[in-house]
Image (cartoon, rainbow over all chains, first blue to last red; front, side, top):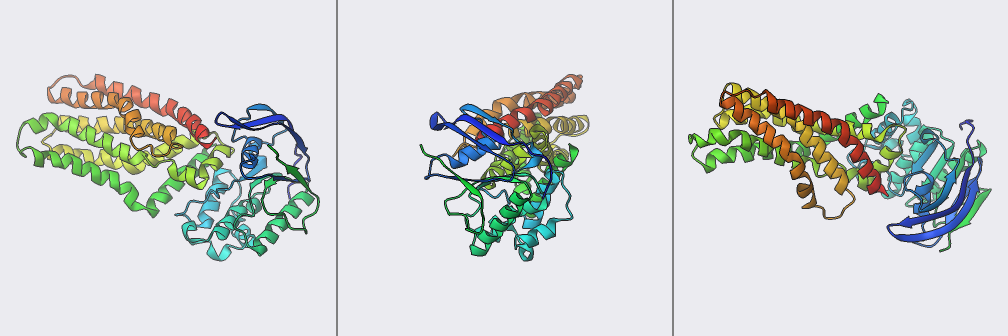
Length: 201
Length: 222
């Protein structure tokens, strides 16, 4: 994992709105390097919106987020996989690498790590939900970045996929990386030191 | 900074190679529209020659409109748009790369086909050359304007009618000056001024609209 020094994320008095409706306000928390923060809450509580604000895709309605990592220090894996259905997992990953200016020799190793190497030349449109999720997670392996934002990363994954992600997260946190993720499912027990943030309206 | 833009450009070419029907459609549409006119009027009617610049230009405009409609929709749906906006590269540059790739794939064939269609409509000699040159200068304006409008409406459901309403008034100057240059050349008048206007529009749209489109896309993701 990367040894880059990363700042701690500090959220103060944050309010998030969708359209003209405020979803939550007065939220404050901090995330330090080496931590995994699991955001929970009922449907519509604003988990995804909160993640979008943290990674700077959405502007907050009020409050501040300080200590945001630089774009090249963060991974964003939204609930959409960012895989073009006409392109294969390998082509999608190669595009992502070229877009972000990272080295490409690790492509096949990353796809191997997430278990879709055998499918790497098939169009993503023909893959199952879980296989596409794994192909999206390959981005975490191909470019080590100290800060991860994952929106429902477990969605569609089978039990071995969940174990795989838990392994990736554990190695990431042990290497001093931080992760903020949302999930309805509980994270596996093998993953220790997960802090939980409950979003209540 | 050029690397990420090049990546976007290459991806558009790759996608076009995967789905040849998608980028061939505007060209076929363009040819059919232009060639229906001689069938609708008599083929040897001299009026056809008078209308030829307008026919070719309006055909190009409609074909461009057809081409830009889905430019960002797929990227929004599959989440690629978020990755483009979060990439460590200026979003306007990536948007410009996408527009440029679309111009190369869908508009340049229109320019190449213009002499053929112009000749089929009775144009020849200098006016035909001016027509092709005017399209070469004008199609990037059509593509960038259309792409900007596509970025504006990408988050809107059922935006079918919105795109032409937004974009046609913005594209009108290109048609006026493009058609005007050919008319002037056919009448033996100086035709440089309308071409310079097309050039000015080209510079304006290519430099300004990627920024506006990037802003619109950021809005669509929110």
